[in-house]
Image 1 (tube, rainbow, N blue to C red):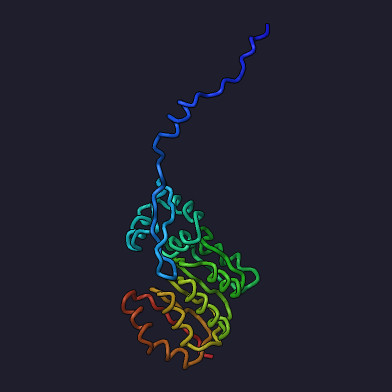
Image 2 (cartoon, rainbow, N blue to C red; image 1 turned 90 degrees about the vertical axis):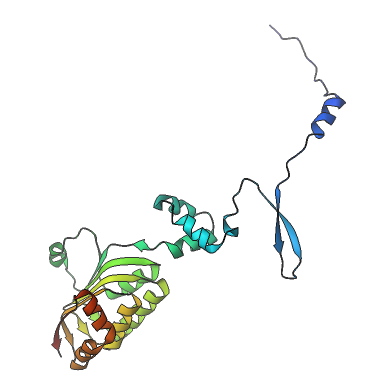
Length: 233
């Protein structure tokens, strides 16, 4: 059964005028100054909250009230948001073991491998510090590693740029060919609270510098955790 044909009806002129006469909501206008000190008006969506127009202190206070899963989503909004969140929220990392030997599995099982990150060589530690921006590492453990002058300079530079914090730094059965000043500089940059150097090959000057250093003595007096069992070479 065919429906009767209904021709297209043109809207009346009165209805069109009535629709055009309705008030339209205009977006809010935002004043901004350019390089020539001339104020220009920029349209802003009224449904968007002007977060970056707030003072820095207020922005930081708002972000610190959010859950970590929400901050992960906000990082993808813009580069400015990513940089802001990256600077106020330190990342929590696992314990790090730098083992220079080829087969550290026996030692790795003894310290309970849960909660640890295993790095095979010192270069991997430098690369990790370069990526760990604002990270807080509970424990950094060097086992049978060769602590050279070149390695300590690269590690200190990466820690300074990335603002890495190491709570507990330990050297076990390592051989030091660098200066003691470089080791102290590294733990100062990382704001280390506990330091342990156990059964390491060092010189007599290396040992004397550590014992007389003010920062090392401050860490010792504060935490009573400085362990210096050194083998003079």
